[in-house]
Length: 275
Image (cartoon, rainbow, N blue to C red; front, side, top):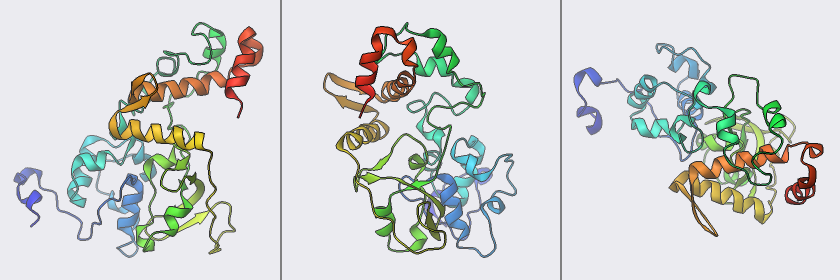
């Protein structure tokens, strides 16, 4: 028996799945479950969770998975609970977002506590108008979309290693730092195949990596640094990860400001937000 499981008390023992590949670096929880299913005939990710009290789709587990479910999946996959937690957005709180519960993640508090391009007291009416009306608002997690690096996929030794990186599915990053190329939209069957949006469905044509400007690479490098170390090194000094991501979201909000409302700051806003 695995030494970690042997050391667990009887009432905490969870019978592991017979086949349970380890999560790949940065992999999303839904991707890991899909790869496990590839090892069993006629099994879907939802079948792996059939006896658990989960009332959401498997892909929604990447945003939030209750702690009891995390512990159960960790036992079944023989993976530390913390490792499973990092495969969901819950593992990146409170740096990336305040909470995975929308009720605990206020838009105005997250976005408007700083100012970067515009004065803090400018166009408050417009700020309120841009506040999302949906109660399900979460920073960076509003529009998940499957994306991957073509160069990374081409370098895989086996289709069994095809997976979806959690943070590549959200607009936190836009490039692959290893290959300095753009993340491309796709549809993936983790552990089996990947289909690029820009290629005719069913075609085995490869997608050529698209280089990104150095400014994009620098931005993504700093965001990755924030996520992995908790800090970003800038010219004036270190900035905490939580401050960094809130500053980025503030910039997104400010460049969305109607120029007619920005008065004498319009010229500055256009100059700062132009390529």
